[in-house]
Length: 341
Image (cartoon, rainbow, N blue to C red; front, top):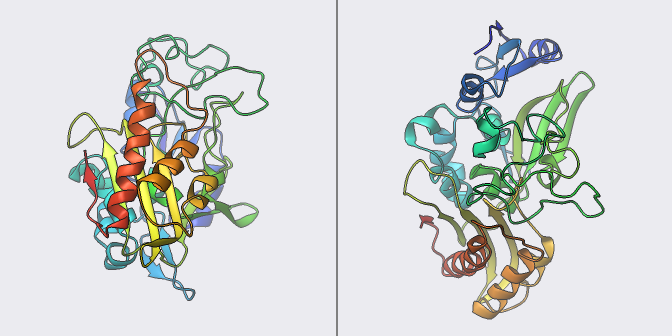
């Protein structure tokens, strides 16, 4: 690990000013950043401790939605009454992530900024990684790629080929994508709101640019719209073991029901791309139809359009389709206790 300076921020403005320095990184829970520093992947020159900022509240907004501070710990958010009762999909996803010890440290803002757990990214002995060294290649494409992406590897219109097949590791973010959350950030030019679908970036020709966050901006919170899926929500996570394992695929499914018909839907996949994967068309195909296997499979086919597997992960395509059908089925039945398969 390289040497670095340490500062403790007392207010967001001070944190933002310090964060604009070259090589500066914000430190909250540190569950991802500190590991990457130990591996030699991250080498910040300044660590700015933001844990003393007043950003650890969960409050209901006048419109019925919820505001979540960037420093709310994952365990506290999962167990918060507003979240458990009104956004069970988010609570389930949080409880499906990592381990209790890590959830006690990890924060909402830090979870948004998790970097991939690709073996070739975190092991600096592999020189080919376009995220670490732009232009060096992607070792995973012809390597051991069981956990890697099957969607979004190449942006439409890109001539760069497949520059990165890593996946985004967060469970929380998959649920927030399905819930249509918004990310609140502050910088030298003031505050701005980033729609969740625009926050994480696909690799394209610049896989090292992972989010829409500017270098001198600080995440201050996340807002959720008024709840629609409180009674019909299910988070499914398929992984190799029941704890402390990342998703091979995950599905966040929320349904607003009128009798046995779907009034509205939120649907997102995790473990399949460098960002939570959502297609509005897949949700639209469910609306005004009776909840059932036929429309659920149709939504799954739309969501997985264009999927491409590699030597070790082609199984993910059908696994994801079946996962979508299962999650939607359980959500439609009013099952709100998410299961990790």
